[in-house]
Image 1: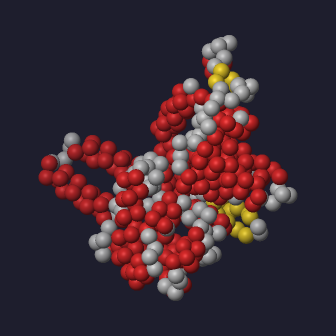
Image 2: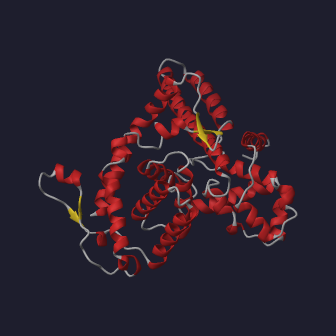
Image 3: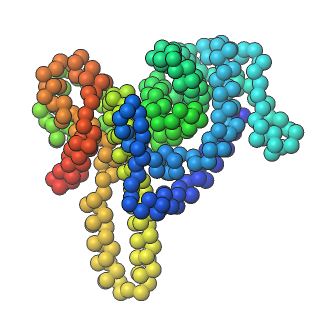
Length: 391
């Protein structure tokens, strides 16, 4: 039952894909200067957030009515019911069935034919997974200031909704969802918006040749990153090996967390701002290339075969040389591995004097940095690798 509802949601979400390119073009037309940032006040400091990405495109569902629709209420109801019937979590045994609920949209679409479902058919979490979620919720309650009751309630609501949504994820991914949620709390205080931001960002990482798609993608991302690390900073690479630092202990988290819970939040939001802005630029670039290809097709009918061949060859060579996605074809957030390399470069002096435990501690708790300089260094590293023919 739940699967049918979820598939309906996915089908609806896929239909929105057709609208997104035009949405981005409209946004950029509205902002003729090409700015994709908006000033955001937080603790008396200026932080720039991805206004274009958050409000209109390309991964966020725009319609506020849809964001707060019955689907979210449904997930929250499931989670609340499961919380009252803990045996569902721990044993998979069917508990009391007092917490039934009705999908109001289906009720309207099917007149008076109410579709009743029970949480036992939806949430059958293993004991280990349920225990991790319980620890996450406990941590959320403990880390929040008791004076910020509304903020704590919002965080719990989002986490419970994510728990009800992602019943098949592993421990690592549960922690990832938590840290994304905490980060997005600094952008918006609305529960359903935080949920969709986290859910869609997580969905991106789980698809499209991104790092969490499957074991093969994870191995590929980590392997290529280690190769780049060895090329860019061989001294530190060898030091990690000498200290007995296994790549599994730090590389997957560094790449998949997008620096969430690693970097101070005022730095993290600036870095994410650039990531999302670059994503928009990449989508716009792809749209322009598609338009160019369409124009070339029309011109092809009017030109001679040799002229057409020359033009296409030149376009393809230029396109290949400047493709920043060549490291992980088709994946998102292309600059992220280079930002990680820039972080390691900045910390080389400290890390080279550290043992294994100190290295892992530092990589989990990065110091505050000058973000603009860090991004410039990451771009310089990428351009250097392209120039050297390594990418």
